[in-house]
Image 1 (cartoon, one colour):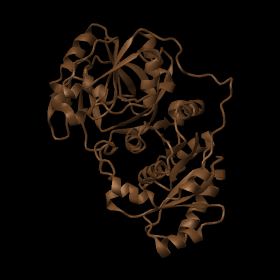
Image 2 (cartoon, rainbow, N blue to C red):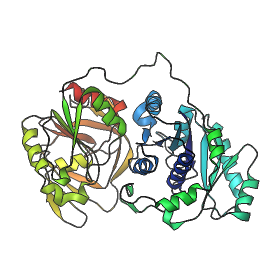
Image 3 (cartoon, rainbow, N blue to C red):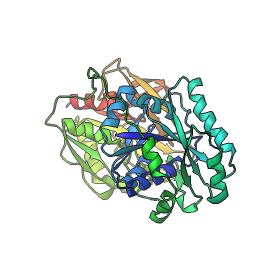
Length: 436
């Protein structure tokens, strides 16, 4: 696929809305659009999927490495790939938008806020283009999309002020209906608060799709000698993956990797599903705090408690860790019984407790790593766990916060609970399958 990156001058400039409008505009041209997201986010991709009609790929250098993001990009399917950036174009020491664009050799369409400027936007865009060399990156800022820009004289002034080496790709008009509601962990998910169709159509009309298509290019072909991280041995194992309102944060590549080597069956604990017959369980992150009562009454958690005590391998990430704990207390002070597999209680807080790329080193053999191995991941949570005095951990944290006292991977029986979200390129899910 040819593609391009939608970067921004900073956080909150409107990259997500500009990305969604771009996807819509290209689809109106009859193209199949493969969305992607630079960075570890789960929420923006849910909006991409709703508009594009296909899952969004995650492209993060810290989580996947340069070869990994190349593999993940090439697993996408479509006529053109639209990659939404993270924060400002050059922000982020572990995996900036510019670094992802450099690694994939994709041009950048820069989103600039035009609400309070006109000619100065040309200076801003030129500065972002020239800064790449100073940052030691080979990045082409191809042009701009003017966010919150009016038509007429305002648009003409922006367009005419651009240096000749920068292309004007259009504008996104100011429209309050294009604002996506926020809550803890970021925006509402795509299925909860989708951008109104009419507003998205109106925004898409002002984007110049012919110029966007001309700017797109295909990343270099991989070296034939490049080693793949994918597991090769298939198994007869059956892996149960929780998927519902409480467990939403799953990278598409994770399910793909599991399905390459095992049978995957999904279940919805908040809808009353019991735990299916399986050889391992994966509880991904999400919003268990919004579904505490339903989880407390779920037969799946009762069965999970019994099966975990019998030695069933269980991996819980963030929200999964919370569901595996003894109790979960909401910000409002309501306490709900959880599965009670792990020796901890969890309490929600009114501000985030951790937000960073993380790295952990295994201090013992565990489900996702062998002793001495390191895993890279991402943590972003508004909860904190209080662990029992005799709690055992599988990892020490070399970057990030972890669960408690610089430790990660709370473990009991063959259950592992962690605040660290990992991508399958880390090898963690292959290690899980190798334990079965």
